[in-house]
Image 1 (cartoon, rainbow, N blue to C red):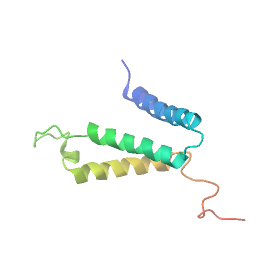
Image 2: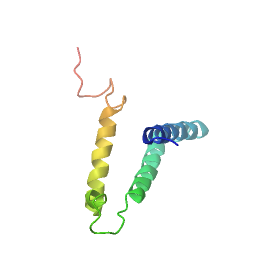
Image 3: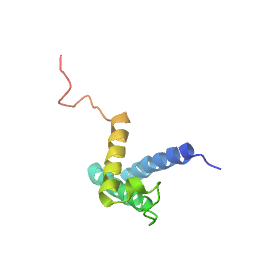
Image 4: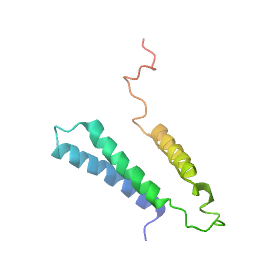
Length: 99
């Protein structure tokens, strides 16, 4: 049986591998278009997986019981993942000091 961490890591790894495979197969493709498409698919699947069960008394579904709550949770998660990414900051960011 796979643990939650194992499946999480595998899903993240496979998403990066898919992006690399697609970029290699389509060298003329704009990487922003490729990454935006992957993000769109991930958001679509995430929203699909977070549909409330339908019971108004369900405590597990309460935080995601409206579209606005689901979007807020998605945005919180994306911000956390972005800030934790090794690619969050770039040496070319205009906010970095220059000596």
